[in-house]
Image 1: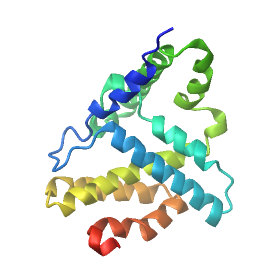
Image 2: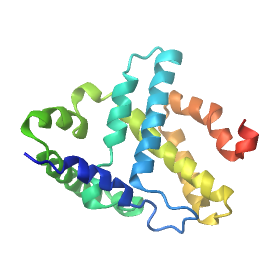
Image 3: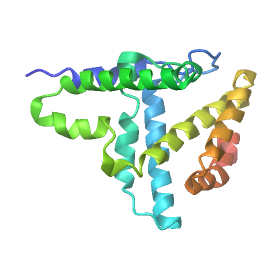
Length: 193
């Protein structure tokens, strides 16, 4: 059987994010997924090392890498639309589930179960999903900081709301990341070294 599963996944680079905003540099879904995965990994390690957790950073990384794959089919629906109200949020979740089923259907039968456990929220991963959501929000905050640093005022409001959403999550690992790692995103490469 020829499978187009990975050919479809590699189309993530064609899905642009932040469609409603003027960007000084565009960001695609591949970049976003990689950055979310790196931060989810870090948050998992912080949880284990500093807060006595016992989560699997590798699993968090994997889940984060694939967390937005449905957008290959749906596109990146802007946040104000996606979360406009509870009904819209629920309907979009159904659309995402259908898109994920379509992607899984492209796999050979012997691989479907393994990838289904990544694309669909499994009970075993419930402790990881808040960290992945936080990592997702942290990448949004970082994008806002980068845009502001390039003189783009378009992202100032989004930066404030992203920071507030992160604080409202009440996840200590996020507070550590914000305190210890976020300030470096304000620096030039020469200042970081």
